[in-house]
Length: 68
Image 1 (tube, rainbow, N blue to C red):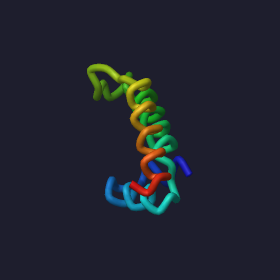
Image 2 (cartoon, rainbow, N blue to C red):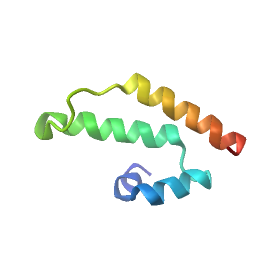
Image 3 (cartoon, rainbow, N blue to C red):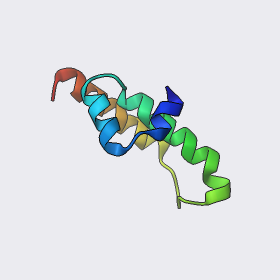
């Protein structure tokens, strides 16, 4: 699934999350993995906040599960 996530647009990912095909936690985890893996060569981020990202993803997952 991680390769699939890498190729999705934001709109596709949002739709799959809404349909509960992809977990927000899974998507955030993969995004962080990719950011950390490429940071040395791309230097795309000033800093990463994985704890905040995962906390937000967990909240989003709860909202999806509630149907919000």
